[in-house]
Length: 341
Image 1 (cartoon, helix red, strand yellow):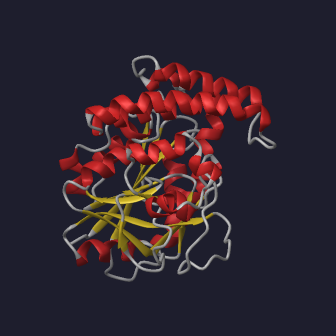
Image 2: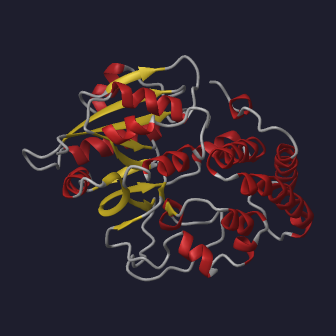
């Protein structure tokens, strides 16, 4: 039985964003029915949180603060927070999430109802209510313009899904049936169902399953793909359940925006290479690098003809060239590409 859920937040230059997340957790915690699941919290400051123990206690009484001298990256800091937490389940939350209503009791009930569930994915909602009917099939937006429902739940990567994304098929035809299947687009989001992969922006994991899995692989730094890797290992123990009765609003993309595209993209694909080296069989691993190179060359070729780009063409070109270099060299340590403070 889940008696306590420990919330773990990793903060990096979050400031007021973190404070709002903590306030929302305290409001949600106050709504837990008497005698219900206890909610504790650990905040790991990876730099720039500007939060004292007293300030944290004012926002979320009883929460514990851990402060790192340098930015350790999400995975190592999340493991650090989990080790310091006391709950039967650990709920990892990003500082740009906001609790909707009271999500903790539904998470506890989902775990208690089925011992085969090793992780629970609360429903991620867009920061602003788009008025979408969760029961109806949604038309998928292109990568980079996804709503939270499309972003949150996915099947684990395969070489086929890699090819669609890298060769821009998912960009040219975002609503294709294979992508719809991979993103669970035709599932009723008002009902619970199993998923292969859920974003760690909001993900609850049984403590014993998390420990058996070895936690987050700390080689995936500073971020990206560490949650994909964790889900792949958790599936060896049991099921990951999407539970819509527990909800969090999520903005997303803040860390990537802070880094800048020319730094973010090489880190993202360095960790993509690491994931595939770890989980793909030899033929697929060998094929991924040529696909990655072809994808970046294709992006460079079409860049001058794109009518609108979300960033400058110069920055995008720099990012594509850097990723192209990754495809022809040994996978670098992504921590060398990341800021340390």
